[in-house]
Image (cartoon, rainbow, N blue to C red; front, side, top):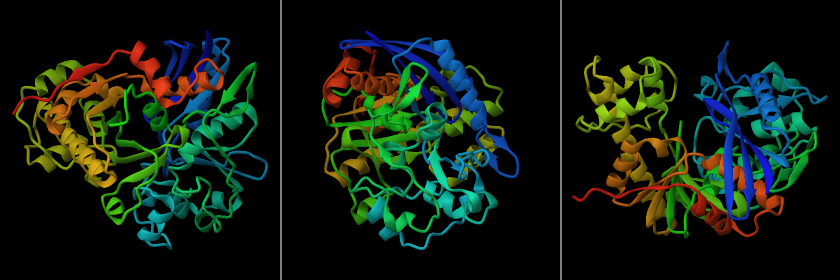
Length: 441
């Protein structure tokens, strides 16, 4: 048995998980958890130095490990000067600087190269917005968040493939940086790494590239038995899609706003970003963080009210309950239970729409839906998603991202052998999954 540390950074919190792994199982322990709170000055920023401090503290608490893997949210980056020093805190993807950015390339041409869903916070748009800044004028290199933290640990720079694929700067076919999209940046982009490659060392532990986009690790952590499944990695966002062997680059796929992101072992994560639990998280913050179990029980007794949960008006933080009530035509003093039911019902309907479109556009049939991540704890959401999709929902593991991170490290260390199916068989043998069957109509 070997021991591995998974550093898993989400948009609202981070943690360090230790996994003791053998070929038939994983014992998982959380050794450190910490908040990830953005800081607003003139812009909205990540506190990257605070995150690095917490990461180091978590690794200290973890004790001796054989290797370390880091995953985080996508698209955001740090700019480095010629000496390798960071030029200010990375800007948060929810900052408004990209609201009206336009590129000198058509949407059709861009999709043909990168295959990505058009989202205003993709790295390619952030860079276009940043080019007039003083920092950009002296920047010489760009590192995505997990790669930046790995650089500080090891002194080695690079760009892990699954996260690089979310930038909009990678060619979806060659899986390398696209010359037409990067030649005018004036920045050095680091070489692409694949999951499983050794980055360097931190103390006596290897630092290993994993699926460093947290969704890529979460998809590895889906305990599916075959290929005919849809996944929903559900937390602040719901990443809803299929695992494919090649990208779908049709005009219909582009118009439906589906993305072709890189996955572990050369797979394609064919998915669409759905707003996820962000509106509910924001409402709960405004309501003083009530007990989520009690809130969902009361919400289950309310009548459904459905809104377009993907409307861009729900992207920014603040005053969320008022915005949801207004979109639903509800009174301003609508109860938290009613607003919660509205959000959860609307999210379940958005899940259904994305899964139906993914099947139609890819030609892949789906027999079951796997929900992993924090949303797997939300019994109301899981049942309403099963009802909306007319398919069984298999909920869990909650810690899919950390498990996927650890499994890639374990395979790199030779503890587990085989393809993704072999990794997932370990999960099916050891992780609890709850089944929700659709209600009869």
